[in-house]
Image (cartoon, rainbow, N blue to C red):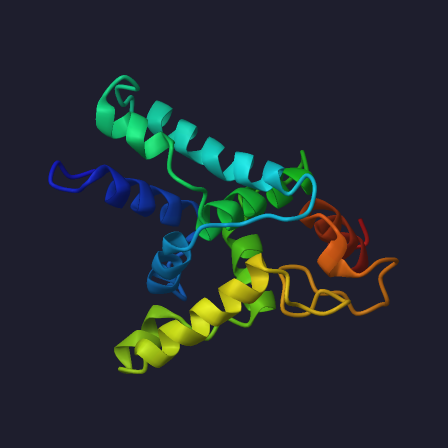
Length: 191
């Protein structure tokens, strides 16, 4: 971490490193997701925010930052972002599917799968280099993210993180994210 980077910039770079495997790169998309707070309405979805905020604690500990420093205290109190929730969820999925015989870190795979489920996977950094990243693109990304946090996806979860093919037992807009994940893993990975 460079001395001239702000704490927030350092944290973003660290967060992004947890889910990046070089190609394709989603750094600009992740920046957009990190600007938007995660809101929750369904009971127990606050746990997803707790997981996201916990990443800050890991960051502070990993880089041995002074927790009494005002900048660090302020940083720890900010709202949980969509990016933090998705990174923490990707880590949780990887832990859930941990295979003792062959454990490879697949956090980036799960992160990209959620990005794809949201329909945001086309917004790579290469997309930006083609000069297609514009205010219209940002509006499309923000609209998708708003649909996610306000649960404007359909009964099957299409438009959310964990869309289902088979009819779920309950409208996915009314199910906490963790149980949406469990149904999704069962349907797609037989778990």
